[in-house]
Image (tube, rainbow, N blue to C red; front, side, top):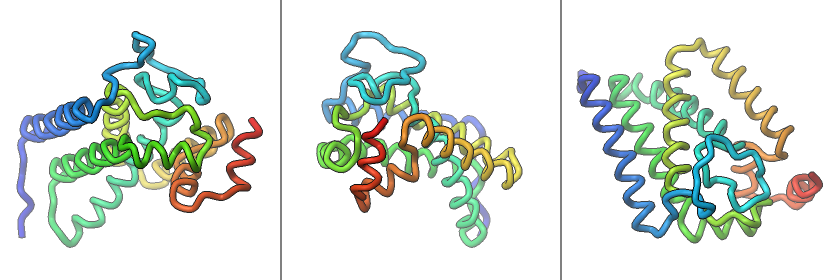
Length: 192
């Protein structure tokens, strides 16, 4: 079976359409378009604040780059059995990330974050932060396609270690605390 070949423009339009749909659904869900503070910052580095996950980038942005690494690898692996072009895999990765962003901003998951992690002031992402998270995933997807595997793995480990050191949280701890909250980890995270 031959993979469906999309032109570059078709792939870009499909990805932009998915991201626009993500933003529209988030707005329909009642998410704030930008930070309630009334402005947009390129970087917000204070995790324990009401502005976390409200601006373009923050300490959780590297986890979305790692999502891109993971999606590239998984979809590349699947494409060994189910032929898919690079463009199709990118569209699927954007669809998965956009879906996660929608799920992550449901009342259920926001309350789960607040109840099992150190994110006591978390009330969901702004739309601009959520869209930026998806774009960070796209960056990770492209980097994984260009870099050798060893470099992608090394950068993912380095990002996890740096972010873990700086804020006592990262993608790995976030997943663990959502799926199987551990009191010891929560205590360690609270002792900043």
